[in-house]
Image (cartoon, rainbow, N blue to C red):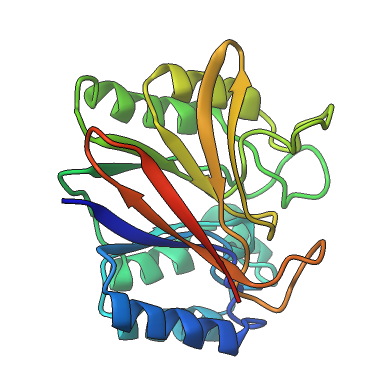
Length: 245
């Protein structure tokens, strides 16, 4: 039995691409994947109406939903809320539509790559704190010996593009090496609005990095809206299909 799930990211409700979302809706209705994973930037400015639109859309899909927060999912126009309770609106969405999902083939482990503020600009780039990494590693340690595929989900890619000297995600190199050493098979992310699927090496460890594109109107580098269909079979390979719209 193979577990199939859709991987989307960077929907940016508020500037979402309704045509692309309709395409995904029809694909889910026709193909009935086992789950939908969304790796952050669900909203554009974390406005309440954007979160309400996101909640309505996810609920209509009638499929288990796994969510990660992105840098756009913390309030832009409410600095008090951003600094004292930045994930409150995201939590409300997650409580309404998100679920814990695992199967005989795959289990997902979350990694938080967003922070409310950091000592550089822009704040939109990733940062993996020791606390966030340790929480993920503790979960990975508890899964040692599990025969299923272990897939880590977060918003920011842990490594920069191949060939680039710098990594925009602070702590990403360390996190990648530790997560790969702990036995993760793949890491699903978004953020860059350009899909990728690479096996990368860092610190002597190798792992697969899989990135979804965007389902918003905020296109980059000529990449169209896209999402992935990913299949996991216990004891087999992880296969992916990129669908560009």
